[in-house]
Length: 273
Image 1 (cartoon, rainbow, N blue to C red):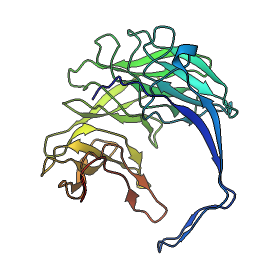
Image 2: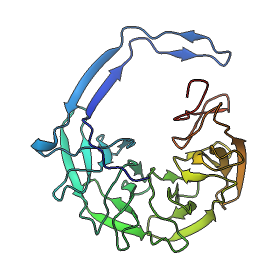
Image 3: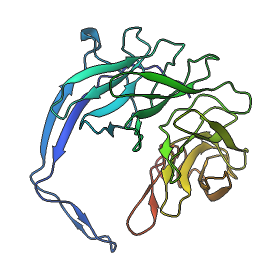
Image 4: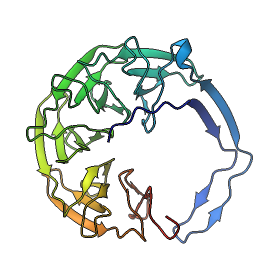
């Protein structure tokens, strides 16, 4: 789902004086004396990147934080940018349409090469999105241009590094696909989702068992989306069919806790909608 709404953004730091503890039994010890620091207020008219709704930060080896934006950059088609721990913002790479546009998912650090990996929802040679890598100094390489010819199109969320060194992701527009791509651009479509498995792919999480876990906004047995796992080979297991009362729009994904369970939000549904 492509959006181009403009929102103001701020970059901040939160330093707890007392750590929040959550036991497996559910006992919470409240954190106290939180220190919040507004590090940077983004201003598009001053040349800042803008509109990065769900972009995940990646901290590179240089200690700076990297992510991507839908707008801003030299062509106002989005950019990869970095923020220092002190809040200084600078552009790393500006998209120009041919190299991508509508970048929202954020970045993933490649641990072996120190480069940053990400997606754009549109742009590229077929205007169906791009998966790419960029160095911290701004050297850009397109790894795969989506064409909607079996590979899907419109990836929204950031890719996840697998245990084998490849990156794994989901496309977001029907047909949704689960794919892998290597650091040199070898792309493989591993699975194409059916209506019964779910539609509108979101963020993946690598589980301790080596499988990937996530949620889908729509489809499934009740039409309200699913929670699922998928192996690195592309074998999908539906773990839960949402029914609206227990949530829908679960594409934000899940996180595995130390107790082995996965926790996640649903963007709509529930007892109060």
